Image (tube, helix red, strand yellow):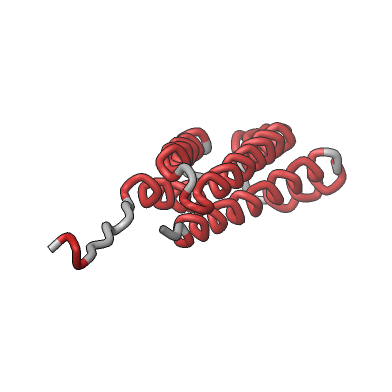
Length: 144
């Protein structure tokens, strides 16, 4: 039985996680550029009260940490997705691959508070299909 649909959905989910990894890397690069951060703060805080300005400054101070979390999480999800694709390939182990994809998709949606929603949904759909789809039994003339 071909598992092309599950593999394609997992690949699309991995690609969306790759986009998240790029965003995480850009946050990490932004952390070291204090001049750019100061310029962004000055542009966004022109008409804001002091309390909101302070919140924005705190956000920009944590941008590097957020970048590392997003980058590491995305890379882990990509690696696990690739492993699941190899498990699905050739219909070798579709049920364990499905369980892995459902688990990773659910955890990534919950941990990122919805930021990994689209990639997680692709993984969950592929996982459900990996578990539920069964090969159609071949009937022969001799059975009748």
